[in-house]
Image (cartoon, rainbow, N blue to C red):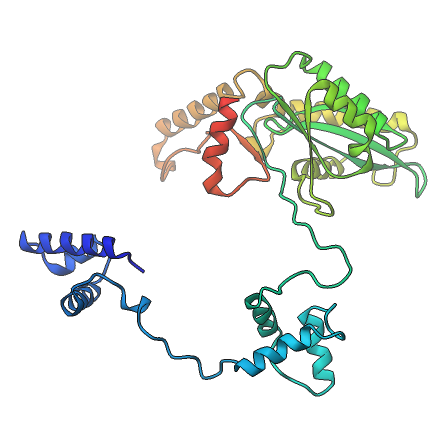
Amino acid sequence: MTEPELRQQVMDLIAEAVEAGARLAIACDEAEISAKTYNRWLKSFEESNEHIDKRTTCLHPEPHNKLSKEEVQQILNIVNSTEFSHLPPSQIVPILVDKGIYIASESTFYRVLREAKQMQHRGRSKEPVKREISTHLATAPNRVYTWDITYLNGPIKGCHYYLYLISDLFSRRIIAWEVWEVESAENASELIRRAIISEGLAKKKHPLVLHSDNGSPMKGATMLETLYNLGITPSRSRPRVSNDNPFAESLFKTLKYRCNYQPKGFSNIEEAREWVYDFVDWYNNNHRHSGINFLTPNQRHSADHGLSVLAKRDIVYKTAKLKNPARWSGNTRDWSIEDYVWLNPEKDSSVDNHLKETEAS
């Protein structure tokens, strides 16, 4: 609906345009209304001398299928009875039907409860808690790390080694890794110390966020104490949500689908470590990552964030087009890249605000 003040302003502008010689239909198109709407507004103004939408003041007939007051009260009496007070409508309605009783649909039960302000958690179970998703923005390397632990098959069925792996959100570079025989907060604590030392972040200028899932090594007291001592902000996925740490999960898929991966198991932990060492070297230095426009993680992690490499690619393509323009129906390939990376991005309306806050910090 259009507010009275806006409606009056639009009508005045259209009338002014028509007086200046414009056609009514074209003037209405510019105002993004139809000529019929304008004529209806004009007729309404001539009758009442007010720019008011009559839909807000007219009497609306009640639907013929509306519940009567007695039926509404019957629903409230049922849901508040001793038999049903602990059950939701999704349980109440089938029980009544089994008794040969139909009063209203399940959705109607819920609507009546909402209107009576009785739409509360029913039963002795703990009320569900809605947790906000962890959202982080990386505008440069060493701002947001993600990490996780995955199984590596051992020499026999049921025997596993544990690969701990930390990667940078912005560049996708593997920052630190290790293979251990046990899963513990102490091992995780040692790995994050290695990561800080290898990247020279002991005296970091910008805050660092470490995102993980809700496993016990991630929440252990030793790990949390290490993070606080190093000035790192811990961040975790929502409980029982598998896709809140997508970059770590994607990296593990790349790892386990390598052609020389050992799905049947490594004979010992040293063999597992040697294989992961070779994988990390290949991944950081040779793997052209589709998420960063086919730069290698080390190129993206460099001082210029790989922009010089992309600029050279752009020159090669444009030179090729100049030599043989007939083979190009449009522009050359776009080698540009976003200068930030989201972890679990927010809605579009919040992106700009988050970018400003990150730049300010």
